[in-house]
Image (cartoon, rainbow, N blue to C red; front, side, top):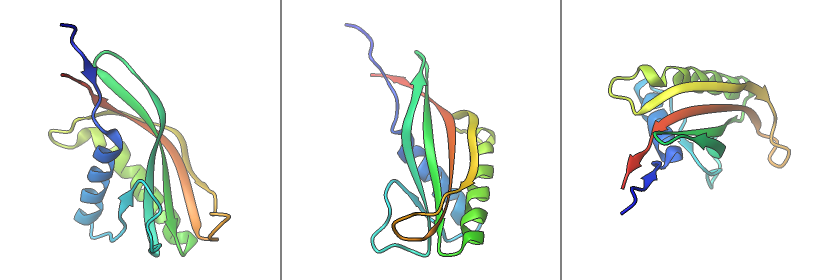
Length: 131
């Protein structure tokens, strides 16, 4: 039988990492894959938008959006998220590797809600496993 190599759910892994790291810093922002309903004052959305893989590594690319009612808070959360992602490979026992930034936080207010939003594009490697 041919060995099948699969990647884990990288969105779920990154969201779990970020939410744990936010809580450890007493930051009330939460990450997810969708705009929450009802919309909170601040939140982070993580969306896989592509990526590449090798036999061993999946290298997903993510759009990471930091939203808030206040532009300063939106940027502050974007900057924290950026820092946490860059530190991701140095966490003990981490399954993440080689974070790379393609586009740092950019001010891109939401045209529908008018809520402040900063968006950035990053990639973080995750180890694939054999079934």
